[in-house]
Amino acid sequence: GLNGTLNEDAPGINVFPNPTSSFITLSNFNPAHSYSISIKNILGNTIISQTTKGKERASINVEQLPSGIYFVMAESDGVSVVKKFVKK
Image (cartoon, rainbow, N blue to C red; front, side, top):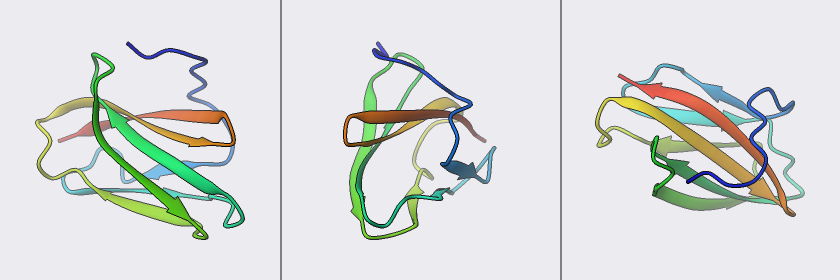
């Protein structure tokens, strides 16, 4: 499942568009940090994972995912932000 602290109202990282049919973009990263990004389904299984460094935003292709509710997690230096999004 999804362990750790879930703070869906965490400041900083934005996820858009939401709902989406093809891509989601995460913005407002600190370019000085690297981020580990993962997309999990409602069961907490990781479906997509990637890392980004030196950028303020990252785009992830979710076109292949079945419609439903997903969580995107961005983790940097042990701090995780989780946002919920809907795949149309």
